[in-house]
Image (cartoon, rainbow, N blue to C red; front, side):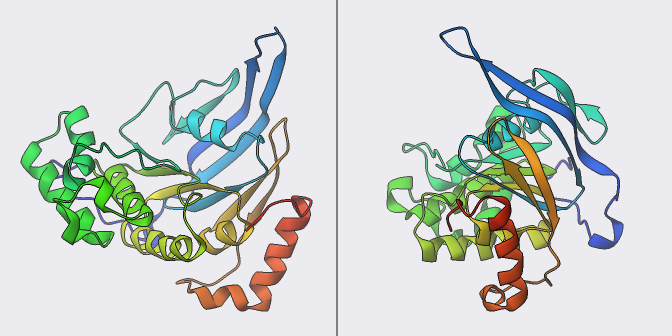
Length: 272
């Protein structure tokens, strides 16, 4: 990572076609209190390219969050292997930034101090971190809010601050576990557009978990459809929709046909 915390420019033309995230035969089994077993993931194989935006779609309990924790190094699979940039994942890595459904901002810290928290944890230069934090807040439309506190922000604004915090240490990968699930429909659409704008400017590798067919399809290069427990990959759907994307795209026949296909894979049980 550059000393000044500024991200390196990455363009689609120079993206590495080889897998950047590589999951091979990943299986995750949890023990229950009664001594039984719950198979959360079963023989999951998935390769994600550098700079790619991948959505993970599936019903509740299919292992989506477990998959994210394994990629992020927060959990170890029962069997199988996960590699990032060719190296085995053995724990949390500075290569990864995470955004969860709840932004979990500390109420006693200003927005800027919440965003720069990773720099404190990783012992990065304070001045450079503050400058980078201000730039990121500008990027996500919160340049005016550096000295505000979380209770002074709307839900969407809090989630934007959470995204800025995840990007602070310039991770190569952004893992997002239903980050917009608690937002109203209009704010959710706005945040989706904001996320695409940030992704297009940084070309991070994004893995985005959602229950929404429309959201998964609108955002991603590919949609990974998970089957119900035990969690398996039912299909990896290539999204053949043009970029840049606007909300008008959702009204097209091509979008509707792709969404119908995904809903059929899910048994028409996933909501939007």
